[in-house]
Amino acid sequence: MKHISVNRHNVPRETFSAVDDLVDKYQEELKSFLDHLLWWNKRVNLVSRSVSRETVWEHIRHSLLLSQLEVFLSADLIMDTGTGGGLPGLPLAITHPKKHLLLNDLVTKKCLAIKQIAKKMEVNNIGIVDGSVEQIQQDQPFLLISKHAFKINELYQMTQHLPWTSMVFYKGEDLSNELENISAPLEINSYSLSTEEKFYEGKSIVVVNRL
Ligand SMILES: C[S@@+](CC[C@H](N)C(=O)[O-])C[C@H]1O[C@@H](n2cnc3c(N)ncnc32)[C@H](O)[C@@H]1O
Image (cartoon, rainbow, N blue to C red; front, side, top):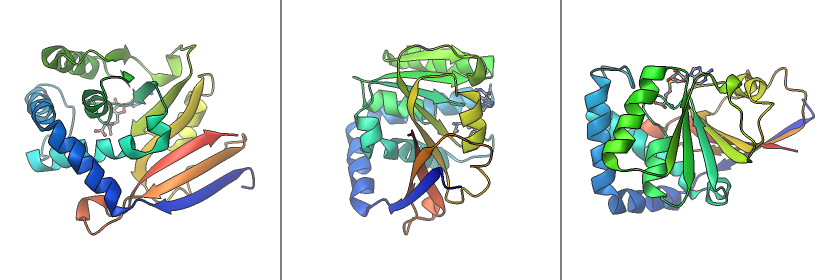
């Protein structure tokens, strides 16, 4: 696939340290989000029912890794599609109050739950977009992000009509089955998160740019 270039990078240890500093700074708010998420998870299936508090906390920290990449730093409007219980969108909104985040999910009851969480926590820099990402209408350019919800080609086909500037995926490192049927020229930068920490083994953040 000559029209799609894939460049691979490793995320350095300092990036994780910077995220840990951010977690320390917003410790109280992020712990409150964790409490709300687990409370709602008993009523609405937002994350796996059997998942431990510690693992959900890791997902929150994982969500924040994007905040260290230029593609996020330079974006004012960000849409998180397939957000489920608000990951990665809500932790990013909590720690970046000057950015505006739109959180989208297909399932109305998940959207209602995250709306309630944001209201209770007074997180005012978000909007909720209920329904399939295919149906969304948006004129303003934005950064499209998604964690563990879509394959690259799947989301690309569903959002060709939207003015996203880049798409960011939280996913594994093997992209071989995800680029078929994309005819447009793209540049992909894949940032490996594999470190000595078991949680991040085989995980990456993939940035897709239109050329
Ligand atoms: C595996 S969950 C991931 C949730 C969250 N991003 C996380 O990391 O915990 C995938 C989510 O994508 C949502 N989803 C599936 N198809 C969708 C679509 N066409 N438009 C918007 N959301 C969709 C599902 O409802 C589900 O909440």
